[in-house]
Image (cartoon, rainbow, N blue to C red):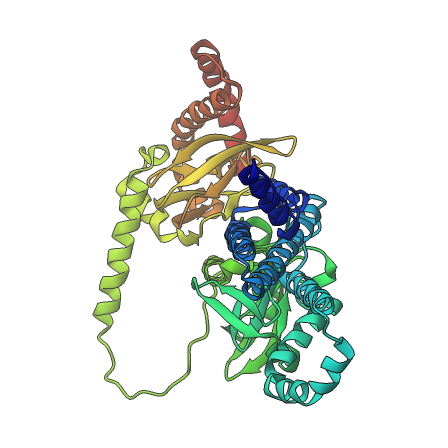
Length: 514
C-alpha cells in the first residue's frame, strides 16, 4: 500500500514538473501533420528538421523529469528550460511555415523568403526574451550592460546587416521579385529566391549565382520584361550592314515583309518588330533589327533564327550583307573559270526543270531558255512563301527542302500536303494569273527557283500547242487540290479534270494572248 502511494506521488510530481503541457504537444503534432499534407516538396526538409527537433526537445524534457525525480534539481531545471525553449522555437518555425508557405500560398500570395525568415527570427527573439523574463532576468539591465557588446557586434556584422537591410528594401519597393529576369554584371538569369542575406539567380547555363543583397542595392542592374507593366517581353536589337546601292526603303521593306510572313518562335507580334537605319559607314548603311523576345531564356537561339530569316529575306530581294572593304593585289583570274561555274549552275537548273512534270513536253533548247530565266529564292523555316488569296504570276520549283501546303478558312488552317524537292507550286498563278489557292510555308530551310511569267511567255508564243498539255496537267493538279480540300471521290475528280481542262486552256490563251 505504501509503495502504491509513493508511485502515485512520483507520477503527480512528474506531471507537475513536466512542461509543455499535453495540449501544447498535441497542437504541435497536429500542426506538423497538417503541414506535411499541404507543403510543397521544397519545404519538406524544413518541416522534417522541425519535427526531429521537437522530438529531441521532448526527449530532453523526459531526461529532465527523471533528474527531477532523482532530486537533481539544478540539472533538471536547466534541462527543462532548454527543452521548453527548443520546443517553443520549433512551434514558432511550424507557425511560420503555416502562415507563409501554406496559408498565403493557398490564397495566391507569394512572399519572399526574407520576409518569412525575419518574421520567424523576431518570433525567436520574443520567445527568448519571455523565457529570460520568467527566469528572473531584468531585460533593461541586460540591454544596458550589453550596449558595448552590441556596438562591437554591429560593427563586425555591418556587411550582414547591410544584406538584411538591402533585402528589406528590395521587398518594400518591389524592385526585384521572384520570377523576374535580371542582368547583374553581365550575368543574366531568373530570380528564384530572395533570402535575408542574398538573392539567388538561376542562369541559362544551369548555374546558380548568389548575389549579396547589399550588392544589388549599390549596383545598377536590369530587370527584363517590364515594358508597359504587362507581358514579360524583352526587346532585342540585331545590327547588320547592307551596301548603299540598296535604298533604305527596299532594305526595310524586305525585312519587315519577312517579319509579317514568317512564324519565328519566341518573337512577339505585339509590340511589332521594326527595322531602322542607324548610321552610315564606308559604302554601307548600318541597320538595327529590333524585335520583342517573349522568353528571355531563349535569347541566343531566337537571335540566331532572326538572323537566318533576315539573311534569306535579303537574298530573295537580291541584296547581300556588306563585307569589310580591303585592297588586295592579286593576279587576274582566268575568265574560263567563271564560265565553268556558270555552266555548272546552268546544268543544275536544267536538271531541276527536267524533273517538273508540267514541263515534260519542252525541248532541251526550251529547257535551257527557262533555266536562264530562273531566279534563286531561299527561304527559312516558317517563311510563308505564298499566301492563299494573294496574286502572283510566278511559280516555285523546290530544289532542296520541304514545304507544307495549307488551306485557310475562317482564320483556321488545314494541312493538305507536304511537297519535297522536285515539286512545284504556284503554277496556276504563272499560267492563268489566278490568285493563290493555298498557303505554302517552309517546313525548314528551303532552296527554290522562281519562274516568272516573262520567262515562259516567249516559249508559249513560239509553240502554242504546249499550252494544251499544260492545261491538262493543271486540271489534274486542280482536281487533286480540290479532293484534298473537299474529299472528292474519283468520279467527281474525273469530272473536275474533264471540265477544268478546257476552261484552264481558254484562260491560258487569254492570259498570254495566244
